[in-house]
Image (cartoon, rainbow over all chains, first blue to last red; front, side, top):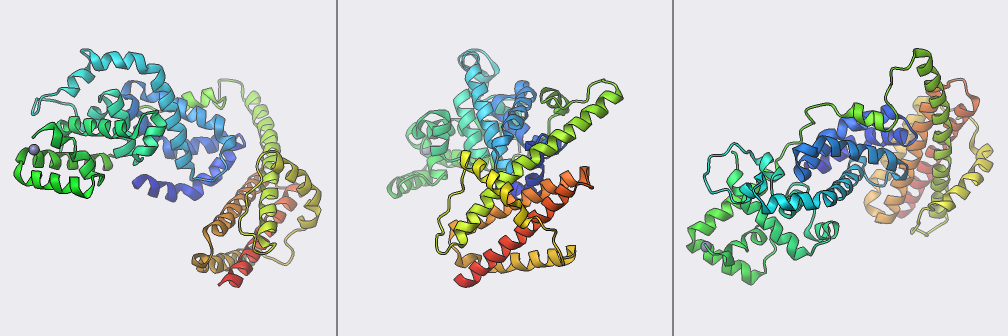
Length: 182
Length: 235
Ligand SMILES: [Zn+2]
């Protein structure tokens, strides 16, 4: 909701800068970067973890720069950039798949997080807990509860069924109950 | 609390249960404190997710991006930079104008179809078609490229505001496709005006750019005028 509103507010300014950036104006692209980096970095951090967030955020903006020629102003720039980001993130996650899988099964932080006993002493706040969720649960939770996508859309993006999307969402929420920090 | 019930809590929160399932769960919730407490926590999780604040990265990432897109000022000599700036400006100007003409062509094509009476469903030409449109528009440029004679900047702005108001007021009576076509075309024309203004700022003396800007602004005025006529006819 807030994201949509933000898009509308930035729309006129963004439209001008997007046209200039598409024509090769790096200064205009830097202004777009400055306005949108908090949102993109937060999305990346929640979906892929803090370790890789900086690197993947840079990938997102580089990809956006390369693809700007195909942006025709049909959606708000923020909305378009968000889709570019999701694609970059999902591509990156596919590469990471095998490594992360081991984390979930093994002794990693993720494994500990998913079985965190209620009331355990923990310094992990809600944001960090999202970053440490098991893979599938994390993607669905961020896309559904944070970003507002519907199960049908998420199923399509991730190549899973709507039913899987729903059960992963429930799994994520159940885990995160223990990390409500307020 | 059993899995049979807890699994239904998220779908319940999201309004995805059937009426029967909802009733069954609600009567269980009335009896089972554990499930009721879990539901409350899940509700808080969802609320917390919606209220998350975006945070910028702790360290600046722009310089790394600038380097990768070839925009970072290196430690080259000042003369080098100046030469590069000049060639970049020239390149930009060229690309900007070649970008705007097909877009303008697309706008005028859509406008012609729209004003040809009753044909509300318009699909904008894309790709090769737009390219062909570009050459025909350059051909026609002479028709519209006279400076905006007799219009001061203020009367131009006032006319734009007035026409936008008329269109805005009858927006509800227009079908969605028409509104979308009007908005898309306005966006294209506005983009073209911005491009022309920027190019002009870099080369204020250019007669071609001055005429191009004037033509684009006239086109916007003309487009709004026709759109307003159409909306009047409808309402
Ligand atoms: Zn129960």
